[in-house]
Image (cartoon, rainbow, N blue to C red; front, top):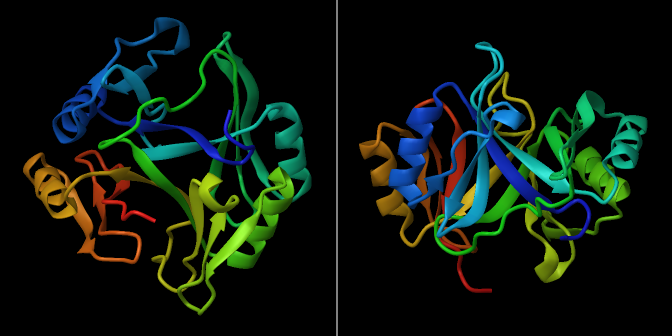
Length: 251
């Protein structure tokens, strides 16, 4: 299991499961398992046979289409209790998912919905390479509060990368073990958009991937731009699920 507080799994809640399967198959070359009836029709995306993400239908038509990020914990009940004591708001759980693991979700004190996954037989993301998660990021309206919350909740180092407002950024984790970042987004999140987690999928060519998203009926939200960590873009699938693309630059 990765260090506590590190993203371990992600899944998409969408309004049209079949359309999402077609879109991500064409974009990343994923396959998708048949629905698991015992788990409400939950499905697993795979890349070259290895688990890469989950997929389910939204439970309520008013529920937004969105990717959810799940953080590793060895005790979901204790972690959820500690999160609530530190000012988080409960969403659900902890709930056992057969022998797969235990899940819970809360909204952190800055407004970001955050999942917890205590792995059993389901160990999280297995796939690596192009078309798989390369990085995760929390864009928050309260950078200092978010850093303190996740640091204390998971005993997780928060290492400063950039400290010049408004582009303040930290790694959540130590050095090469870090798989997620914390962005001070207070200056640019649109009104009504809460703090939130996002995933970056690795692609060999961000411009080409953006063109493919458009051809498949999706949208480019933030066009490709170069950064010190490699080219990046923000896109949206045809049902409204936002995610990011990047071509990681060697350290």
